[in-house]
Length: 462
Ligand code: NDP
Image (cartoon, rainbow, N blue to C red; front, side, top):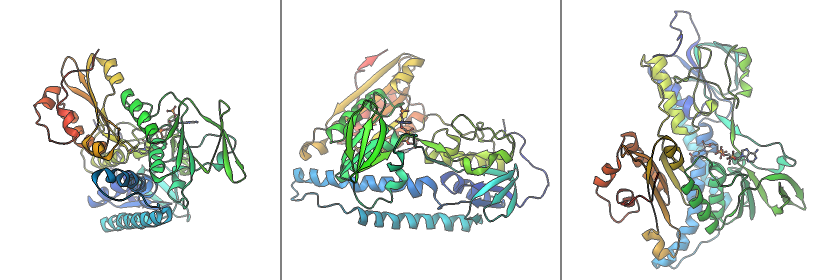
């Protein structure tokens, strides 16, 4: 199998590859193609690094780390330390974080230039299937064009939505809100609930569904929701924001059931939409979009127009940085290295940097049980670190195992370092490990992770 109609003619173009978007996917593709000796241009209208580096994963993780200090100080007393949380200075944090982000952006820039990529720091839109027009009016032709423009926060159209922040605004916030309402129950809403709770805000999480993190394993969702509430987040399920208004300097929120509350800030984390609006795609006649506005692509990331490919969040497949990077590598292998490669979107390990943290890979219990009979192994336990720290919070670890083949189909963890654990556990899943393989693996003691290889009796079979 190979990508359709790749243009191998001797027709002269300005570039072999022109990339629109300098985020994780676009940067990786342009560097790799350039290093293979192809002539590559890249247009970015904002900062290099994209959502992940500038207003997503990296600054978010720095905020998670900042927020974690409060519980570290708190727990330290149980270990004999005479200390407590001092005051958190958000402005000092933002300054330190911005310095780090500037440094990373600089590294991306120099790596691109060192690889020989020609950089255009301006907007680019389609003139036709092989031609881009830059904001300055210059037109450039390319044998192949890669759309890697990512996504942008989506805000529902409700009265007063102009008073709400998005995740983009959080990274510029200079004053910690005393009371924060977060609308949404996905990755971003739950992560920021943990961050602001850790930093000392009174957080209300307002989610329209019956349980947060739709699509995740049900035991994980319940465990997280209860643990967040235990840590002080006011989790309101089956509740949605109907309107926001500003009254005497406060934000007044009315829910669909008529509840009224006041907050200093309101954050909407109600999903993201692919960035296709500014591309003038109608000029590249025939590029199909799906119902969400994402560029529809095949397993080679090729759009309905043979010269145009797309990777990352703009395709709305699995919206994670490492996935965009892998899609970019597969694209370059296919188009420029004569190695047709499909990205494998199965069994992608992922973490949600909630407090407590989630790590998950493979099928949920419900997904697995839909396919074949399963055995479920699960344990909840209080880790050693929480004993002296005086906390009751428990870990949850769960293995979903195919009853017939004994293969482990899913691993789900809630607790400290779940993200680190799931990266390694993901290798076992990729290798098709069986429960017996887990049982044969000697535990590392004393750790939380050892529970993964000492689970004895199933709690359920289907
Ligand atoms: P998600 O799709 O994860 O969650 C969106 C949430 O908003 C859902 O709870 C959804 O409810 C709710 N929602 C959607 N529309 C409305 C509406 N009109 N009114 C009220 N609620 C609404 O999106 P996020 O914005 O949290 O994150 C975007 C993506 O970014 C994620 O899917 C993930 O791929 C990626 N990401 C990954 C991270 C990581 O790897 N740790 C961290 C952050 C983001 P419902 O469930 O009912 O549809």
